[in-house]
Length: 182
Image 1 (cartoon, rainbow, N blue to C red):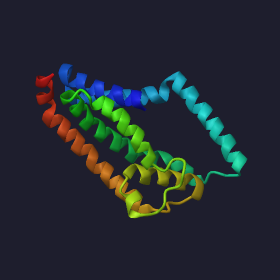
Image 2 (image 1 turned 90 degrees about the horizontal axis):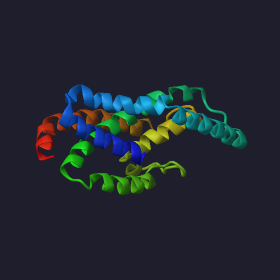
Image 3 (image 1 turned 135 degrees about the vertical axis):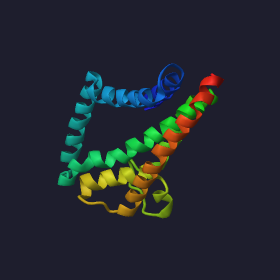
Image 4 (image 1 turned 90 degrees about the vertical axis):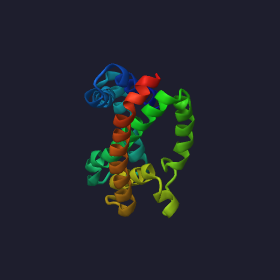
């Protein structure tokens, strides 16, 4: 994750300096997603992870719900949120060199706020974290079969739809400033 985030930050700053940002910035994001999907080592790792996940599901007697097929629709808001944050962090990295180091620490701390291993208690504090709402929604679609907290997921989708254009607008508005500063 940190390597991908660092690559995204570096790619977007290079794009500001050397290419037309409208197409090149989106091309950098698409290249990251395509490399993640089509790269043979990543594909093999994904298949191994799927096999381990199937074994764990079988060991605990969990049968995935048919709604698990909707997971890509749940991951879309997460992709939009990360892309919007990436645009903003790419600018910050161009202005302040320690952003990539701070991002490593922040991501490590942020993982404690996301209910990956332990189920998140329902509450307003958990609902403020859009990533937690998306993770809970993915869990619900696979295990429960329906969304247990649809308002939290709707809020996360709304935040994602606000963060992406805001990050993109900020990136476009400040790209010449960052290029001059570098």
